[in-house]
Image 1 (cartoon, rainbow, N blue to C red):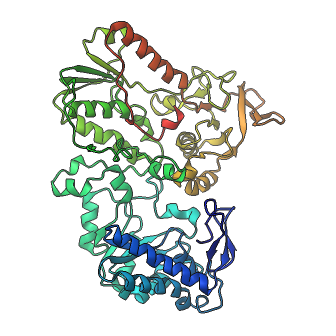
Image 2: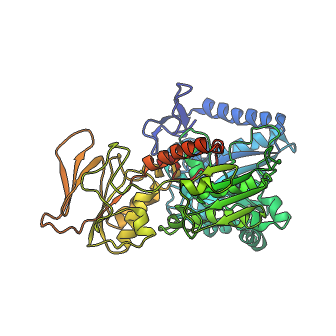
Image 3: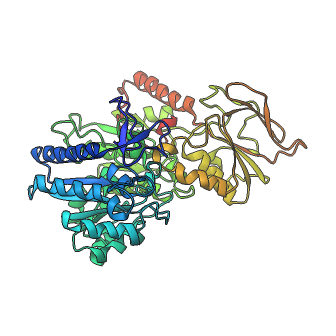
Length: 566
């Protein structure tokens, strides 16, 4: 039910407090529920609560948060235009939610704890929404006797803005909801649960001691590490695998796909009977010596797992002086410092394994690998950005693209090598459609460059629509005056000009300076797919010829936000 109901499965329209079209999903709308509809929906809440009790649940939550849920829609004047006893005044708009809580409370008695997830502030300071000092605490006072505890959050005046509750680390710091949630404390003696991407045990303890919260809500942190409470209780704080706030977990759910986590490679594998993500059985071939080539996130995770499974010796060899692969520079992009936890946690775990030896600053070629003496070899060398403009959308290189030239750069050249970006005007060509193109554009714009971002996609950073970051990133691009040219292929990089054609046909377009000054550097936004594939083929040939055996299957190891580009 509600304005955001698609009806895709039921082929039925959804009902809501008023007949309105969704402000977030253009294919959705609601009809105005009559009294029979209202009573029927309340009965459905009751039936669901009874099923939860029969299934053994301890808590039932009547949710009204993140811009979703009929109870919240009734409460908000933005969506409730009724003139009967369920609309108009604040007390009338609260009636549906209060009656629903009363009926659920009566049905389950003391068998279940009853709570409600309330958006205490929709963050736009309008009486059309929820303001913590007005409608937020007002509803708490009306419903306090009906709940056993409160589940509070902020943000989400519409479904599109759900991310203002589940904000990414790029735009929202830990405990970002404190300003609003703590204002509810004087209005209830009931325990309060709150969220805010809490990853630090010290922050959690401070929130409880200060009285802001009584119970810590931690969905994404628990996805990254399901054993946070146990590790805190056991004094193993340094073993906590902290959430990096990338929202890749949410993105996969939004895409209707299998959930993954950048930090937790085992997420989604819990269905395996007799298997535990942090209990490691000794490998059947534990007497073997293993060489892992490449110490990016995947190589590090692989070495940790092999070490914990008791392999005789694991050598993790990295060509660079520092571990972390591409995360060495990704963490330096604007707003992405917390992503560095992917490397930091794995380094701390590697240091605890006596049978894992880390060797950095050593590049291995095929003969060296053959002579290394390993029984098993894992190739985890990853990939790097193409220097010739090779990209997925065109399946080809770009004429004139050569990162050996001073005015053409790759992300690694900018972030790792410190290659200077000449001139004032820059074209960023983004074929990745996630965070790298817009991050490089942001970095250069903040450095004073005039940036044009060109992409063959329908818009910049499309994947951010799934992570929720687009809601903040698109206004940021505008604020930084970054020009966006969407649905265009770059076909040639000339003398001070970037040539392109519209995707699907149309007249050519040029960006640059016709006077021949090459002060419009372009960045090859393309992941070097050919190198990644070639590395795997090279490894298969090498190991087959040496008799060492096949490479270890990495399976779910090293899932990271860049994986979709490879």
